[in-house]
Amino acid sequence: MKTYLEEIAKDVYAFLVWDDSWDSYNNCYWLLEDNDILLIDSGKEEHSRFLFSALNGKGISNSDVTHFIATHGHKDHIGGIQYLGEVDGFIHNNDLELIPKNLRHKLKMNLPDHGLTAGNLKCVLLGHHTKGSVLLYHRESKALFCGDHICFFAEPLNGNKVVDTGTLEREKFQQFVSDWSQNEEMKRQHNFNLFIEGLKAVTNLMLNIYVRDTA
Ligand SMILES: [Zn+2]
Image 1 (cartoon, helix red, strand yellow):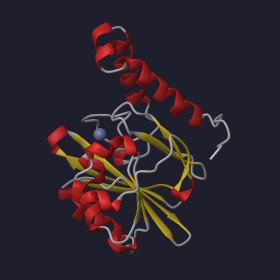
Image 2 (cartoon, helix red, strand yellow):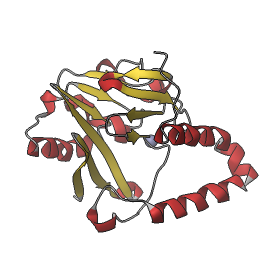
Image 3 (tube, protein in one colour):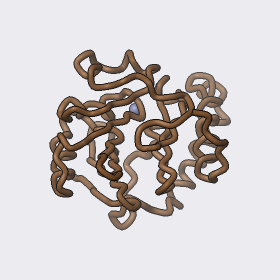
Image 4 (cartoon, helix red, strand yellow):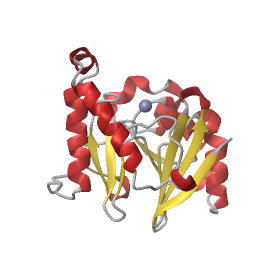
């Protein structure tokens, strides 16, 4: 199984596992903060042993994870949580219907539409990919986690590095958005306006011009 583990910023790790079923990677992230270990997205249940082996390689066992946040309720983002120990788990309640009943006890459905959550992460409801999709922003590292609001498929990693300037991806993505913007039926079917609103939220955070939290 092809996997990557990289420290993408100080104490912020990305773990990628290749998934043949959709020709792309499933991504998980963890943040080390004082005595807390915060996991963002868990990958699929069947891939959890790869995630846990990556954590173990850094001296962390699955029961050491203290917090879990799901960017949304798809199985490739929450499937592995049943193997975590006692965690404070969070997801947006708009995704309640996506969460299998056997996992619901692990998750509090109280991520804010706009405010702070565990790990001092800013959380903003995007609601496009799923009704409860959120972005999470870690101000200290300037790492932004946007779940599947933005996806890339079958793109090789440049130099086997997770972090890249993204020039190639940017051009392809601009073309993708441009094509979408000119297809009225696609725009209606896939709520283009909401997608663009999400991109604006991402951009505002990256430009650090986000309004102060009220939460
Ligand atoms: Zn998804």
